[in-house]
Image 1 (cartoon, rainbow, N blue to C red):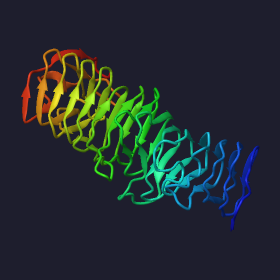
Image 2: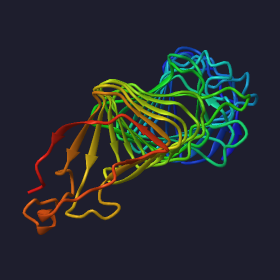
Image 3: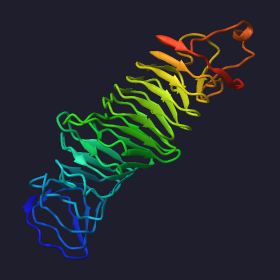
Image 4: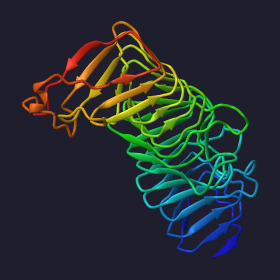
Length: 365
Protein backbone atom coordinates (compact mmCIF):
# COMPACT_ATOMS: atom_id res chain seq x y z
CA UNK A 1 0.00 0.00 0.00
CA UNK A 2 1.19 3.53 -0.56
CA UNK A 3 0.89 7.01 -2.06
CA UNK A 4 3.20 7.52 -5.01
CA UNK A 5 3.93 10.24 -7.57
CA UNK A 6 4.56 8.55 -10.89
CA UNK A 7 6.82 9.89 -13.65
CA UNK A 8 5.59 11.04 -17.02
CA UNK A 9 5.12 8.14 -19.44
CA UNK A 10 5.66 9.32 -23.02
CA UNK A 11 5.09 6.20 -25.11
CA UNK A 12 4.60 2.47 -24.80
CA UNK A 13 2.45 0.80 -22.15
CA UNK A 14 2.16 1.88 -18.53
CA UNK A 15 1.38 -1.45 -16.84
CA UNK A 16 0.04 -1.47 -13.28
CA UNK A 17 0.13 -5.07 -12.09
CA UNK A 18 -0.26 -5.40 -8.34
CA UNK A 19 -2.30 -7.05 -5.61
CA UNK A 20 -1.66 -4.09 -3.29
CA UNK A 21 -3.69 -0.92 -2.95
CA UNK A 22 -1.92 2.23 -4.09
CA UNK A 23 -2.48 5.91 -4.92
CA UNK A 24 -0.73 7.40 -7.96
CA UNK A 25 -0.65 11.18 -7.74
CA UNK A 26 1.53 12.13 -10.69
CA UNK A 27 0.40 13.16 -14.17
CA UNK A 28 0.48 10.49 -16.86
CA UNK A 29 1.21 12.06 -20.24
CA UNK A 30 2.32 11.10 -23.72
CA UNK A 31 0.81 8.82 -26.35
CA UNK A 32 1.10 5.53 -24.49
CA UNK A 33 -1.57 3.25 -23.05
CA UNK A 34 -2.54 2.45 -19.47
CA UNK A 35 -3.23 -1.16 -18.43
CA UNK A 36 -4.39 -2.12 -14.93
CA UNK A 37 -4.01 -5.78 -13.88
CA UNK A 38 -3.88 -7.60 -10.56
CA UNK A 39 -6.46 -7.72 -7.79
CA UNK A 40 -5.48 -4.53 -5.97
CA UNK A 41 -7.05 -1.07 -6.13
CA UNK A 42 -5.12 1.68 -7.90
CA UNK A 43 -6.33 5.25 -7.34
CA UNK A 44 -5.42 7.97 -9.85
CA UNK A 45 -5.53 11.56 -8.57
CA UNK A 46 -3.67 13.45 -11.29
CA UNK A 47 -4.97 15.50 -14.23
CA UNK A 48 -3.64 13.06 -16.81
CA UNK A 49 -3.08 14.07 -20.42
CA UNK A 50 -2.02 10.82 -22.10
CA UNK A 51 -3.83 10.01 -25.35
CA UNK A 52 -3.65 6.22 -25.49
CA UNK A 53 -6.27 3.67 -24.48
CA UNK A 54 -7.13 2.57 -20.94
CA UNK A 55 -7.67 -1.15 -20.23
CA UNK A 56 -8.73 -2.53 -16.85
CA UNK A 57 -8.06 -6.28 -16.68
CA UNK A 58 -8.29 -6.88 -12.94
CA UNK A 59 -8.95 -5.32 -9.57
CA UNK A 60 -10.23 -1.75 -9.32
CA UNK A 61 -8.99 1.32 -11.15
CA UNK A 62 -10.33 4.31 -9.22
CA UNK A 63 -10.52 7.68 -10.99
CA UNK A 64 -10.43 10.09 -8.05
CA UNK A 65 -8.97 13.37 -9.25
CA UNK A 66 -8.05 15.93 -6.60
CA UNK A 67 -10.49 18.38 -8.22
CA UNK A 68 -13.01 16.29 -10.11
CA UNK A 69 -14.52 19.30 -11.89
CA UNK A 70 -11.24 20.31 -13.55
CA UNK A 71 -8.75 17.44 -13.11
CA UNK A 72 -9.96 14.76 -15.46
CA UNK A 73 -8.20 11.43 -15.38
CA UNK A 74 -9.07 10.30 -18.91
CA UNK A 75 -10.21 13.35 -20.90
CA UNK A 76 -7.52 12.83 -23.52
CA UNK A 77 -7.50 9.02 -23.62
CA UNK A 78 -8.70 7.38 -26.82
CA UNK A 79 -11.10 5.07 -24.99
CA UNK A 80 -11.63 2.82 -21.98
CA UNK A 81 -12.25 -0.95 -21.80
CA UNK A 82 -13.16 -2.83 -18.61
CA UNK A 83 -12.76 -6.60 -18.83
CA UNK A 84 -14.14 -9.59 -16.92
CA UNK A 85 -13.64 -9.42 -13.17
CA UNK A 86 -12.46 -5.81 -13.19
CA UNK A 87 -14.05 -2.54 -12.02
CA UNK A 88 -13.58 1.04 -13.15
CA UNK A 89 -14.76 3.38 -10.39
CA UNK A 90 -15.28 7.14 -10.63
CA UNK A 91 -15.60 9.86 -8.01
CA UNK A 92 -17.33 13.04 -9.12
CA UNK A 93 -16.48 13.87 -12.74
CA UNK A 94 -13.04 12.33 -12.53
CA UNK A 95 -13.38 10.30 -15.73
CA UNK A 96 -13.94 13.03 -18.31
CA UNK A 97 -14.82 16.27 -16.48
CA UNK A 98 -18.01 18.24 -16.01
CA UNK A 99 -18.78 20.00 -19.27
CA UNK A 100 -19.93 16.94 -21.24
CA UNK A 101 -17.72 17.59 -24.27
CA UNK A 102 -14.74 15.30 -23.65
CA UNK A 103 -16.37 11.93 -23.00
CA UNK A 104 -14.59 9.02 -24.63
CA UNK A 105 -15.92 5.57 -25.66
CA UNK A 106 -16.24 3.16 -22.74
CA UNK A 107 -16.77 -0.61 -23.17
CA UNK A 108 -17.79 -2.81 -20.23
CA UNK A 109 -17.46 -6.50 -21.02
CA UNK A 110 -19.16 -9.49 -19.39
CA UNK A 111 -18.47 -9.74 -15.67
CA UNK A 112 -17.07 -6.21 -15.47
CA UNK A 113 -18.47 -3.18 -13.63
CA UNK A 114 -18.47 0.56 -14.29
CA UNK A 115 -19.10 2.08 -10.86
CA UNK A 116 -19.89 5.63 -9.73
CA UNK A 117 -19.52 6.83 -6.17
CA UNK A 118 -22.70 8.05 -4.47
CA UNK A 119 -23.80 11.37 -6.02
CA UNK A 120 -20.86 11.32 -8.42
CA UNK A 121 -22.84 12.66 -11.42
CA UNK A 122 -20.46 11.30 -14.06
CA UNK A 123 -20.92 12.31 -17.69
CA UNK A 124 -20.67 9.58 -20.34
CA UNK A 125 -20.79 9.72 -24.12
CA UNK A 126 -20.71 6.34 -25.89
CA UNK A 127 -21.09 3.46 -23.42
CA UNK A 128 -21.06 -0.09 -24.80
CA UNK A 129 -22.38 -2.75 -22.43
CA UNK A 130 -21.14 -6.10 -23.72
CA UNK A 131 -22.49 -8.12 -20.81
CA UNK A 132 -21.25 -5.73 -18.14
CA UNK A 133 -22.95 -3.69 -15.42
CA UNK A 134 -23.41 0.06 -14.89
CA UNK A 135 -23.79 0.71 -11.15
CA UNK A 136 -23.30 3.14 -8.30
CA UNK A 137 -21.80 2.47 -4.90
CA UNK A 138 -24.43 4.00 -2.63
CA UNK A 139 -27.48 6.26 -2.39
CA UNK A 140 -27.56 8.74 -5.26
CA UNK A 141 -30.07 11.43 -4.40
CA UNK A 142 -28.57 14.90 -4.69
CA UNK A 143 -26.77 14.90 -8.03
CA UNK A 144 -27.14 11.49 -9.58
CA UNK A 145 -24.83 8.78 -10.77
CA UNK A 146 -24.48 8.86 -14.58
CA UNK A 147 -25.38 11.59 -17.08
CA UNK A 148 -25.96 11.43 -20.84
CA UNK A 149 -26.28 15.09 -21.89
CA UNK A 150 -25.55 15.26 -25.62
CA UNK A 151 -27.79 14.31 -28.55
CA UNK A 152 -25.16 11.81 -29.72
CA UNK A 153 -24.76 10.07 -26.34
CA UNK A 154 -25.63 6.37 -26.36
CA UNK A 155 -25.83 3.25 -24.25
CA UNK A 156 -25.11 0.51 -26.80
CA UNK A 157 -26.04 -3.00 -25.65
CA UNK A 158 -24.32 -5.81 -27.55
CA UNK A 159 -24.89 -8.62 -25.00
CA UNK A 160 -27.34 -9.12 -22.14
CA UNK A 161 -26.37 -6.49 -19.58
CA UNK A 162 -27.54 -4.69 -16.44
CA UNK A 163 -27.95 -1.10 -15.26
CA UNK A 164 -28.45 -1.09 -11.50
CA UNK A 165 -27.44 2.54 -11.02
CA UNK A 166 -30.01 4.88 -9.49
CA UNK A 167 -30.66 8.45 -10.61
CA UNK A 168 -29.46 8.05 -14.20
CA UNK A 169 -30.18 11.12 -16.33
CA UNK A 170 -30.65 11.56 -20.09
CA UNK A 171 -30.61 15.33 -20.48
CA UNK A 172 -31.15 15.37 -24.25
CA UNK A 173 -33.99 13.75 -26.19
CA UNK A 174 -31.45 12.63 -28.79
CA UNK A 175 -29.54 10.50 -26.30
CA UNK A 176 -30.67 6.88 -26.54
CA UNK A 177 -30.45 3.33 -25.28
CA UNK A 178 -29.76 1.10 -28.29
CA UNK A 179 -30.18 -2.64 -27.72
CA UNK A 180 -29.00 -5.11 -30.36
CA UNK A 181 -31.24 -7.86 -31.73
CA UNK A 182 -31.96 -10.77 -29.36
CA UNK A 183 -30.32 -8.90 -26.46
CA UNK A 184 -31.81 -7.50 -23.25
CA UNK A 185 -30.79 -4.62 -21.04
CA UNK A 186 -32.16 -5.21 -17.55
CA UNK A 187 -32.52 -1.69 -16.16
CA UNK A 188 -33.17 -2.25 -12.45
CA UNK A 189 -32.02 1.25 -11.55
CA UNK A 190 -33.94 4.49 -12.05
CA UNK A 191 -34.11 7.35 -14.54
CA UNK A 192 -34.73 10.75 -12.96
CA UNK A 193 -34.88 14.43 -13.88
CA UNK A 194 -31.84 16.68 -13.57
CA UNK A 195 -31.10 18.17 -10.17
CA UNK A 196 -31.15 21.70 -11.62
CA UNK A 197 -34.79 21.34 -12.64
CA UNK A 198 -34.22 20.18 -16.20
CA UNK A 199 -36.09 17.12 -17.42
CA UNK A 200 -34.72 13.76 -18.48
CA UNK A 201 -35.83 11.78 -21.49
CA UNK A 202 -35.81 8.12 -22.50
CA UNK A 203 -35.38 7.07 -26.12
CA UNK A 204 -35.25 3.33 -26.94
CA UNK A 205 -33.74 2.26 -30.26
CA UNK A 206 -32.43 -1.02 -31.64
CA UNK A 207 -34.39 -4.22 -32.22
CA UNK A 208 -33.58 -5.78 -28.82
CA UNK A 209 -35.39 -5.45 -25.48
CA UNK A 210 -35.08 -2.86 -22.73
CA UNK A 211 -36.60 -4.04 -19.43
CA UNK A 212 -37.44 -1.26 -16.98
CA UNK A 213 -37.85 -2.74 -13.50
CA UNK A 214 -37.29 0.33 -11.33
CA UNK A 215 -39.41 3.31 -10.24
CA UNK A 216 -38.56 5.89 -12.89
CA UNK A 217 -39.56 9.51 -12.31
CA UNK A 218 -38.35 11.45 -15.37
CA UNK A 219 -40.95 13.72 -16.98
CA UNK A 220 -39.43 14.27 -20.42
CA UNK A 221 -40.82 12.23 -23.30
CA UNK A 222 -40.34 8.45 -23.45
CA UNK A 223 -40.06 7.25 -27.05
CA UNK A 224 -39.99 3.57 -28.01
CA UNK A 225 -38.66 3.96 -31.54
CA UNK A 226 -37.68 0.35 -32.21
CA UNK A 227 -37.57 -3.06 -30.56
CA UNK A 228 -39.36 -3.80 -27.29
CA UNK A 229 -39.79 -1.90 -24.05
CA UNK A 230 -40.79 -4.34 -21.29
CA UNK A 231 -42.14 -2.43 -18.31
CA UNK A 232 -42.19 -4.37 -15.05
CA UNK A 233 -41.58 -1.33 -12.84
CA UNK A 234 -43.10 2.10 -13.39
CA UNK A 235 -42.80 5.28 -15.40
CA UNK A 236 -43.75 8.62 -13.89
CA UNK A 237 -45.66 11.44 -15.54
CA UNK A 238 -43.95 11.06 -18.90
CA UNK A 239 -45.73 10.98 -22.28
CA UNK A 240 -44.94 7.61 -23.86
CA UNK A 241 -45.02 6.98 -27.61
CA UNK A 242 -44.58 3.64 -29.37
CA UNK A 243 -43.50 3.92 -33.00
CA UNK A 244 -44.27 1.89 -36.12
CA UNK A 245 -42.91 -1.65 -35.59
CA UNK A 246 -42.02 -1.16 -31.92
CA UNK A 247 -43.59 -2.99 -28.96
CA UNK A 248 -44.59 -2.17 -25.39
CA UNK A 249 -45.21 -5.07 -23.04
CA UNK A 250 -45.21 -5.80 -19.32
CA UNK A 251 -47.26 -5.43 -16.17
CA UNK A 252 -45.90 -2.13 -14.90
CA UNK A 253 -47.48 1.32 -14.65
CA UNK A 254 -47.32 4.18 -17.14
CA UNK A 255 -47.91 7.34 -15.11
CA UNK A 256 -48.53 9.62 -18.10
CA UNK A 257 -50.18 9.23 -21.49
CA UNK A 258 -49.51 6.34 -23.88
CA UNK A 259 -49.88 6.52 -27.68
CA UNK A 260 -49.44 3.74 -30.25
CA UNK A 261 -48.67 4.66 -33.85
CA UNK A 262 -49.79 2.66 -36.88
CA UNK A 263 -48.20 -0.83 -36.78
CA UNK A 264 -47.04 -0.37 -33.19
CA UNK A 265 -47.75 -3.34 -30.91
CA UNK A 266 -49.15 -3.45 -27.38
CA UNK A 267 -48.81 -6.75 -25.50
CA UNK A 268 -50.19 -6.13 -22.01
CA UNK A 269 -48.98 -8.53 -19.36
CA UNK A 270 -45.68 -10.29 -19.39
CA UNK A 271 -47.46 -12.05 -21.03
CA UNK A 272 -50.02 -12.28 -18.19
CA UNK A 273 -51.20 -9.69 -15.69
CA UNK A 274 -52.40 -6.09 -15.84
CA UNK A 275 -50.63 -3.11 -17.33
CA UNK A 276 -51.85 0.20 -15.90
CA UNK A 277 -51.96 3.51 -17.77
CA UNK A 278 -52.79 6.45 -15.52
CA UNK A 279 -53.22 8.95 -18.36
CA UNK A 280 -54.92 8.82 -21.74
CA UNK A 281 -54.37 5.77 -23.96
CA UNK A 282 -54.68 5.99 -27.75
CA UNK A 283 -54.38 3.53 -30.62
CA UNK A 284 -53.89 4.69 -34.21
CA UNK A 285 -55.37 2.85 -37.17
CA UNK A 286 -53.36 -0.35 -37.87
CA UNK A 287 -51.87 -0.44 -34.37
CA UNK A 288 -52.24 -3.84 -32.70
CA UNK A 289 -53.09 -5.21 -29.28
CA UNK A 290 -51.92 -8.79 -28.74
CA UNK A 291 -54.02 -10.34 -26.00
CA UNK A 292 -52.64 -13.50 -24.37
CA UNK A 293 -54.51 -16.35 -22.65
CA UNK A 294 -52.49 -19.23 -21.24
CA UNK A 295 -54.96 -21.69 -19.69
CA UNK A 296 -58.48 -23.08 -19.88
CA UNK A 297 -59.82 -20.57 -17.40
CA UNK A 298 -61.61 -17.24 -17.14
CA UNK A 299 -60.19 -16.48 -13.69
CA UNK A 300 -58.26 -13.30 -13.02
CA UNK A 301 -54.56 -13.41 -13.85
CA UNK A 302 -54.64 -15.96 -16.68
CA UNK A 303 -54.58 -13.34 -19.43
CA UNK A 304 -53.18 -9.94 -20.30
CA UNK A 305 -55.21 -6.90 -19.30
CA UNK A 306 -55.14 -3.11 -19.65
CA UNK A 307 -56.39 -0.65 -17.01
CA UNK A 308 -56.34 2.93 -18.29
CA UNK A 309 -57.80 6.40 -18.10
CA UNK A 310 -59.59 7.69 -21.20
CA UNK A 311 -59.09 5.29 -24.13
CA UNK A 312 -59.36 6.36 -27.78
CA UNK A 313 -59.32 3.56 -30.37
CA UNK A 314 -59.12 4.77 -33.96
CA UNK A 315 -61.04 2.77 -36.56
CA UNK A 316 -58.73 0.16 -38.05
CA UNK A 317 -56.87 -0.65 -34.85
CA UNK A 318 -56.56 -4.44 -34.47
CA UNK A 319 -56.67 -6.96 -31.63
CA UNK A 320 -54.98 -10.36 -32.01
CA UNK A 321 -55.90 -13.31 -29.77
CA UNK A 322 -52.80 -15.26 -28.72
CA UNK A 323 -53.48 -18.69 -27.20
CA UNK A 324 -50.25 -20.58 -27.79
CA UNK A 325 -47.60 -18.52 -26.05
CA UNK A 326 -44.82 -19.87 -23.84
CA UNK A 327 -46.26 -21.89 -20.96
CA UNK A 328 -49.76 -21.96 -22.39
CA UNK A 329 -51.95 -24.99 -21.67
CA UNK A 330 -54.95 -23.78 -23.67
CA UNK A 331 -56.66 -26.75 -25.36
CA UNK A 332 -59.94 -26.43 -27.22
CA UNK A 333 -60.85 -30.08 -26.54
CA UNK A 334 -61.10 -29.24 -22.84
CA UNK A 335 -64.67 -29.16 -21.49
CA UNK A 336 -64.09 -25.56 -20.42
CA UNK A 337 -64.78 -24.53 -24.01
CA UNK A 338 -68.15 -26.28 -24.21
CA UNK A 339 -69.91 -23.02 -23.37
CA UNK A 340 -69.35 -19.32 -24.17
CA UNK A 341 -66.62 -17.61 -22.16
CA UNK A 342 -65.62 -13.98 -21.67
CA UNK A 343 -62.65 -12.04 -20.34
CA UNK A 344 -62.04 -8.39 -19.58
CA UNK A 345 -59.33 -7.14 -21.92
CA UNK A 346 -59.49 -3.44 -21.13
CA UNK A 347 -61.00 -1.02 -18.63
CA UNK A 348 -60.95 2.78 -18.79
CA UNK A 349 -62.62 5.87 -17.42
CA UNK A 350 -64.06 6.11 -20.94
CA UNK A 351 -63.54 4.03 -24.07
CA UNK A 352 -64.16 5.48 -27.53
CA UNK A 353 -64.12 3.27 -30.62
CA UNK A 354 -63.35 -0.42 -30.93
CA UNK A 355 -60.91 -2.94 -32.35
CA UNK A 356 -61.10 -5.02 -35.50
CA UNK A 357 -60.45 -8.72 -34.87
CA UNK A 358 -57.13 -9.72 -36.34
CA UNK A 359 -55.23 -12.98 -35.98
CA UNK A 360 -56.59 -15.77 -33.78
CA UNK A 361 -53.92 -18.34 -33.01
CA UNK A 362 -54.54 -22.04 -32.63
CA UNK A 363 -54.52 -23.50 -29.12
CA UNK A 364 -51.34 -24.77 -27.47
CA UNK A 365 -51.86 -28.41 -28.45
